[in-house]
Image 1 (cartoon, rainbow, N blue to C red):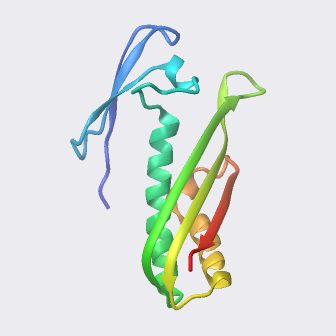
Image 2 (image 1 turned 120 degrees about the vertical axis):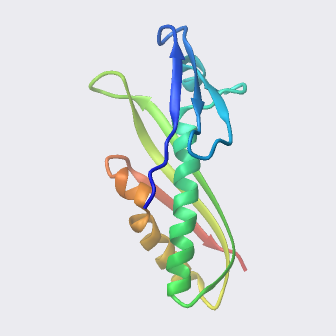
Image 3 (image 1 turned 30 degrees about the horizontal axis):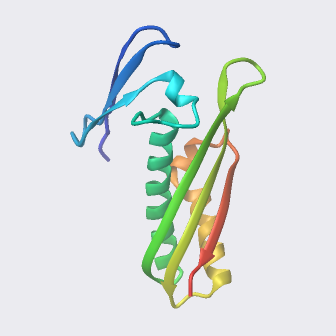
Length: 146
């Protein structure tokens, strides 16, 4: 399996500095980052490690769920997956991820709601990023759309 690479160029202190994250492997973009924007309610054109992680986790989970649903006999028409990654204070000092909410709505034929929920739960545990993030509480909101 391949290795994927991203890099960050940073200038300045944590409080006043800024950087650029480059998605090196895909070469699809470079995105601005800053700590004040990372901890602000408004991003104003800046991304953050948490947003990038949310993007990665939602994509990984969608792929894993698609595989689990297909193995269970379902036909996946569409999946809409959102990951909300929250950062907060770490009681030991600094910051930590305080939770991840995966929200999925699926259009799947040949499975009922119970089978969809079982597959969604299985995929949450089998997603490689979920496995890597075992130190963070990951919750799931899954619904089959009829």
